[in-house]
Length: 239
Image 1 (cartoon, rainbow, N blue to C red):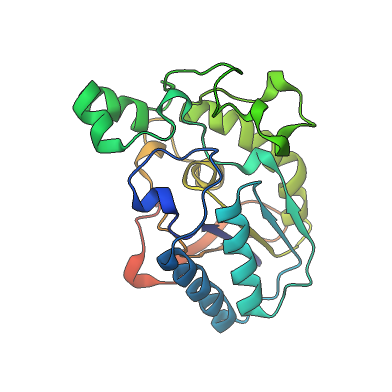
Image 2: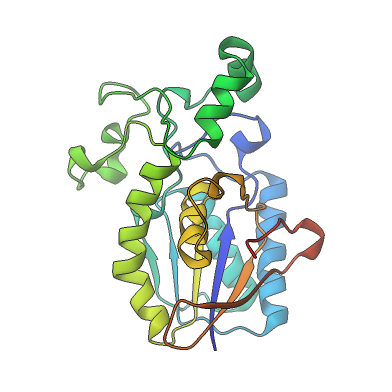
């Protein structure tokens, strides 16, 4: 049996401020640090030895990974950072307060932007301050590949090819992996692993800083069992 752990970063500064974050590189709050630290302890209690870890280009996910590995005393394992694991890009909603956005555009429209599968937020161009073309960490990436706004579907279209090409073969080879990422990039993996429909996947949420331990059949991506390690903050999982 092969083990895979998915963890959403701990609470971020803009989570606390109720703002659309996406690709903006905000840090963890004190609560987020505590959540990430507890996640490492819970993983240590399971006695898991990881072969490799993956994370995004964003500090909140990277720091969550660091704290988890520190709690495990496994900081030495290989870590791959890749922008394909970044959060969904919220386009023109980026930085806006969610309640103020509801007040301006109405609950129904904001719900569509946040929870529909294939309706993107307002798209921004490369001249916008929040477009990744203006961030030096993406300087080596073809600008045409960088999003100016993404629906959940577009996020999946970015995350899943990377997962299937780079990560899935290692899982099938029996490696135990830890992935520290974001609510929507992890939804993509949840959809793939649990075979969730397009209609249902927007309804699943990942609690911040709470590792999801998945047992997989050897040599496959077939899920045998899955559970959040902090049961008090667990979210529903697909059947």
